[in-house]
Image (cartoon, rainbow, N blue to C red; front, side):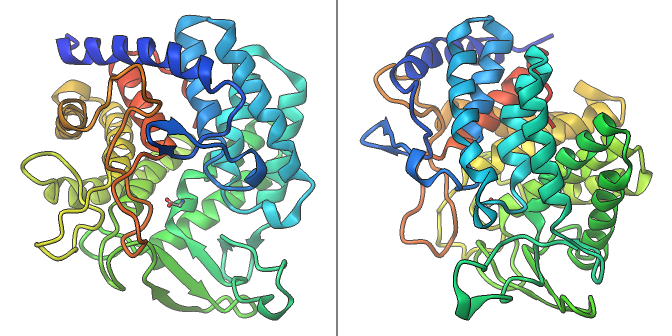
Length: 375
Ligand code: GLY
């Protein structure tokens, strides 16, 4: 039985978004200033620019209100500027096109969206380095002096982008995309997963020999620490690789990472930026809570016990903590989820970030069984 607060959250999301969508119909939001969404239309290559589209498709799926569909389509067309810009295409194509073009294709059968998503998948597959069996994360071609600096860099976040490759293989009946995704996931198991079930953020390879050189600290507290959003990407990402491949080793990894994550959830259910940050630091990252919750719910379904599963119970605990403490339901402000953090060492912390809202909505839709599955 769905708990009352979950039903209430689903209703509140629909109500708030009906206002927020209308007044932000032509924007590509990332964060809010004084409660109002900003607009990244002129920075269209930023990795988060698909999430607003994803929110619109999730809302359209449930309400069938065409306004959401129109907003999502406008954003999808804006993203086309990425496709003509090699510097703008990176490993984050999953975040950009699964939530826009693949969503559009799933919901409406739009063939143009299908072509866009395949083009993005081809580009992503082209980032695979067979020397180290990894997908290169970032670019550096724009700056002549720095060219090659990122050629050997792979990051944990990429686990969430692999479903674009699984999708492309399924659509084209060409297993190359699948093989690349699986090889990358296997490399992550070998070099990113630690003994205790936590993961590193950034790994560096020699791009010529493929030798793993080192891990470096990324958006978390320090080298060797445990950036919570990175743990969440890995948890959900391995669960998705299991769902797409049915390879038991990915399920085992997802369970190990989940075990580590759950052991570290604070009593209040609110997630810090890094599980290893100093005790006196109270900075939170609500996005990590929302992403990990989505992963845990899928994991609970995958192991077949669903509501009774500790994974499901942990997800509900975190989501309830967000619902009771970190949601802004005012109809005057644009974002829902508060206290999101992009990186520990950034100047600003605890603001609103679009993917906090996206994953919270996805999680509540999962709990109310009305989700459009986009991964
Ligand atoms: N994918 C970048 C981040 O999670 O901040």
